[in-house]
Amino acid sequence: MAAKTYYEKLKDPRWQKLRLEVMQKNNFCCESCKDDKSTLNVHHKDYIKGREPWEYGVAQLSVLCETCHKELHDKIDPIRWLSTVLDNNGGDLDRHKISFIIAGYLRCDYKLFLKKINYEENEWSLTMHKLGSRLQKIESTWLEEIKNEMV
Image (cartoon, rainbow, N blue to C red; front, side, top):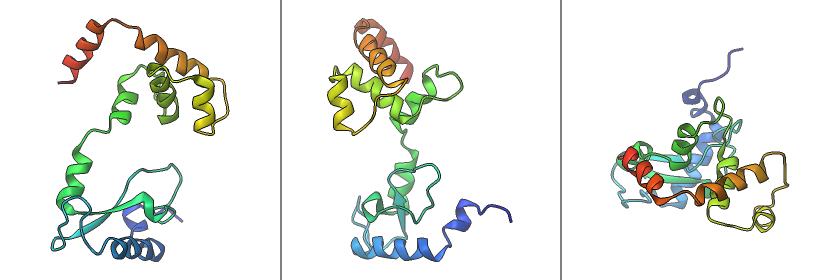
């Protein structure tokens, strides 16, 4: 049997039940603009690889009108953008690795960061943290170049 498409999964009764629960919780109103007349969508705030649409908690979902939902999806996700811009040997730089780069850049204590996010040290975590620390030391002219390229 062929795997279901994402659109087909949204027809699943488990998704429909969760969707209704989220809509009721938010009084059938867009959380962004408070519109209660337009068609509403239930938006996943984040996607977790391998998880089905109905395998999320209510807090991980939001109600948005079609306009706000489109606007949200049209915005650039900075973490996703960063992972595509960095030279990452074929795309293996995920959100976890980027978080360690950012923590290093912000001069967060490495051991305290591991403890706060309840994460075990592994082969890449310290390397990514050190990379962030080195990036933080780069001259402001380099940061200006990046800012200009982004525009």
